[in-house]
Length: 53
Image (tube, rainbow, N blue to C red; front, side, top):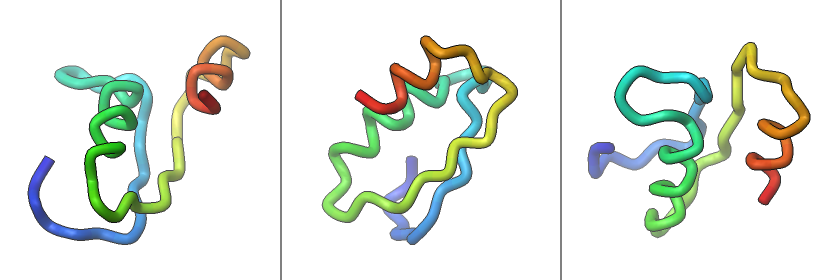
């Protein structure tokens, strides 16, 4: 991720290099965490559970 600040992030869970779960974990180190909207075809209950933890 870059050092630029941003207010909102549209995030897919299935990405080729770093998946959405890893990206969400990395966002926790930001001083200001943007609002995140997950846009994904992965609607399995287990995926939703992982996002809410």
